[in-house]
Length: 384
Image 1: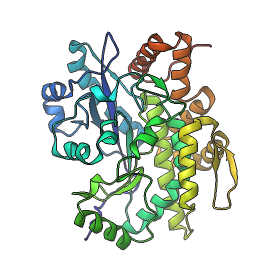
Image 2: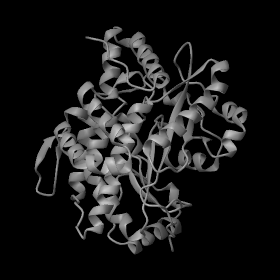
Image 3: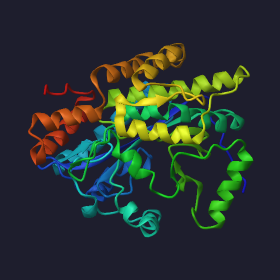
């Protein structure tokens, strides 16, 4: 199996944002993505908007840009086009890792062969994929850099998982996790953390094996948290929960953008990139999904540990010169706002508690998520 890696300009960036379609009155999910897609017409043809796994979901996609700011602005233009269709339908847009109270058993799947195959194969786990995420692509100019960067990015999975965690509720229950989405999604056979391949030939052997045994029909059915995207010539980061607003999307995208460029620069300097044993990488993902911003994460193969927010602060200091070079210093600076004021899962729990919990509290959570997407920035959590 020859897996061609497309030519791509170094550190270009493209973003994909999965959005839930919710009823403007009840806050429950609406199965209207096919109608929205049909009404959009030209936007769909241009590749800016596409359907997703469930009929309650629509994905808005940016073009390829040099800066994160440009990519986020493109997404906001796409959302404006979607709202021109959804507002008259009394449908709102919302994003979080999960919908707080909608039940997976009531959701309809988009009529596409690849999606019905998921359901047929994964059964109850496939039916429970009522989740939303964001995908960040960063261009890599040399295929030989891709796998070292992918492996090194696994060191930073808990940073991204904790900062983006936005799925404490699932099926109207508080799961006790900051990111229920992270654990749900990895139940699919080819999802979750990637194998740490050392050479491109090893990756090609893996893909050949998966194709030959019928596990996948094409490479993009390998849904790892961090993966090569050969068709685009990028490293694709899929760790993050769905993000509720454009400012935090820009912040997390800038962090990913800077990390990939920083690692690429270290390869240029002849350095060996940091990696960690798979058992530490798996433990870090679980800790960040469970405890979010309170997670104590493992830093290296020696087993040293640190509070994730302290690790993020040190990382931001290291990446600030990279952000200046990439034109995303402002966006990277907004990561500190997440650390200072709290991640989405914390705001959601505060809103639910302020409204007495139960059904009323969860409806208020949906309303707050809808308001954040319209505002374009996080809204203050109510005092408890």
